[in-house]
Image (tube, rainbow, N blue to C red; front, side, top):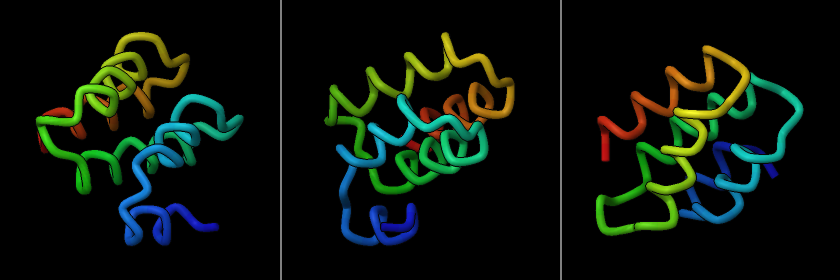
Length: 73
């Protein structure tokens, strides 16, 4: 299933899985962006996952996307 479809369906859990586990930095970055669009500030697990990506991902692109996502929440 595409990242867009996951976001359209509101499947934050699967987007978090993509953010944490994808081998592609582009997929991880887009998953972070979409989480920022569909998430809410009340979703503690989502926030923890995005913060972890912002702090620990090897890719600067993913870290930047995660920071932007947190700003949107």
